[in-house]
Amino acid sequence: MSRFLPRLWPAIAAAALAAGAVVAQVEGGNRGVAPVDSSGAYEVDGVGVDVSAATAAAARYAGWRIAQRKAWNQLSQRLSGSASSLSDGALDGLVSSIVVENEQIGPTRYIARLGVLFDRERAGTLLGISSYTLHSPPMLVIPVQWSGGVGQVFQQRTPWQQAWARYRTSNSAIDYIRPSGNGPDSLLLTAGQVGRRGRAWWRTLIDQYGASDVLIPTVRLYRQWPGGPVIGVFEARHGPDGALLTGFTLRVGNADGLPQLMDAGVKRMDDAYQEALRTGDLRPDVALSPPPPAAAPDPVEDDAAGGATDTAAEAVPVSQVSIQYDSAGVGAVSATEALVRSIAGVRSAVTASLALGGTSVMRVAFAGDPDLLKAQLQARGLQVFGSGATLRIRRAPQLLPPDLSPDNPAAG
Image (cartoon, rainbow, N blue to C red):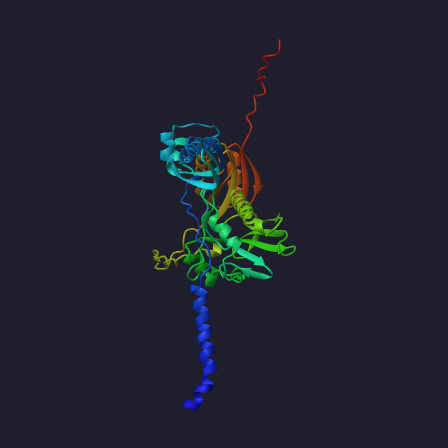
């Protein structure tokens, strides 16, 4: 029996190596970076302070207080359109944390660039904007980095994944699901996976992470020479088919600037995804939704002659229509939604992409042909542009009656 063991050693060794490789791929060390806390706080970054005091601790404390005041002014200006001020005690109850981006501490002087995070619910209540928030469905992020012809996601810790992990998404309209790279992430989320087209496998994958769709931010790195300039070609892709939303190129002078290159790339990617959400281009693939349950057969009733009766009318197909409209404020949003819901045949009308002060997008389920919906909107005095499943509405300008001349204080 022992003479057969030498023949089995190669197979045993190969099996052991294969098992060890699988275990190493799942339980290996530097896989990824856990994302920072993005629980929904309002963030104001890049606040500069330069303070002198009797001691270093007093200067730092005073610098943080000044940063809170400056950040609140910027936040209120950005969200409500007018700057406001609060007492230090009120700000202490609103600020959830201070992020130190860069600081220099001397014996009596404190120079720093800080970020301030405000509690979203409390700050929003004070600014009167807590009722409406723009938010996308949950999106699984697969950050793919190509360097030297090799594509990686979580097989190794990459600068691209690190940049996505440290990016604060609290101010973004996109609901990102950012895996950390632990456990099965390195096996499920790979550069090869983004090339798959089978919807059944994709549906199973995103269900594992509680997502509705997938975002595939991709970067290709090109190095001019070792230690020299680094060029990053970025592509914002979306969905199982990898639909390209936008692309851009960034460059840094040497490898030491690679983290700044990646951070700038993530920021522009986030802006691109938010713009796609506002324009209606970032919509989940309907094929990724779980199949509807089978409908129970309708009971068959006998008519007076003893035969089966046919249904009185076939079900009217429901059309999904995207309507873009001007949303100057919360009142305009509510009024436009109420107007559309009042139209006969409208099953639902919900603003899916909100942009206060700009153009919002409403998703409308209409029982009938979209052209009929367009005609009914025009009958209500709206200007309607476009056709089919995408419409743009605008309130018609108010014209003076022909027998009424306009006021002209300068005349006569």
